[in-house]
Length: 352
Image (tube, rainbow, N blue to C red; front, side, top):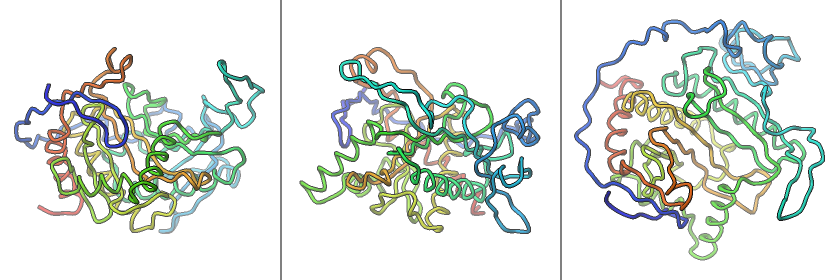
């Protein structure tokens, strides 16, 4: 392999390859005939099938050049939408759970929460890897609004935002979508990150993720950087081609991102995910937002997005021992995905 590496903050161990890549070579664009059409008649998330889902709680439409937010309660069902948010058909939490309290060692409590599906485009074949930056901005601003509203609900400690894109990534639908799930407690990974950040701030006076930014921006593991964000392949990546998108300055709240920052985030998301898709033959992937709870104000973390292309499966060493094997080192990842991401950036901003 190469090296035994430890995570920036935790004791996670990764056995990672240090083998160098061959220089990335631009590939010819593939023509996908399915991209030419935008609707799959049997897909319940496609336009025309609004009656087959639960009523939308948020719908974004464009009318006379202006963006308008509505819901199916205003006009059921809203047509000609560009973003649509509906309750999940198979929720993992419920706003009215039954009693389920018990103590350790068989602890349980009611799984109270809300579970929504955000349909990110009316086009069945348009996802985060190929949509316009304008549509990405529409999705991100709608996401801010929905998260903000959910934190006003009772018994919501955290709003989790995830994307499972592709069957191998666990997607519920083939139509591109985000999932928004409220939880009555902090997720363990988020709580640990917040505790690590608090400990670092108390002991060293610096945010640990800010330290990561200072180390990685402009270095061999940077994939792409914009004015406000950096995409990096983390030092001890637990999965091949894993990468993070991080605000360059200390930010704890995605909800407080300005319109300029949202536009910049849309650009780097689109370029890196588009580069990943072209460079790795359109893999299934998971995406997760990591941000502070808007209610747990004493536990703050530097928010970021983590992306996990499904290029390798976890084995017994990972599952049983907590030791990860990464066949593609982060320096290789940054070199390869960086080349494809810069190609995407050049195409989007019109640079030849």
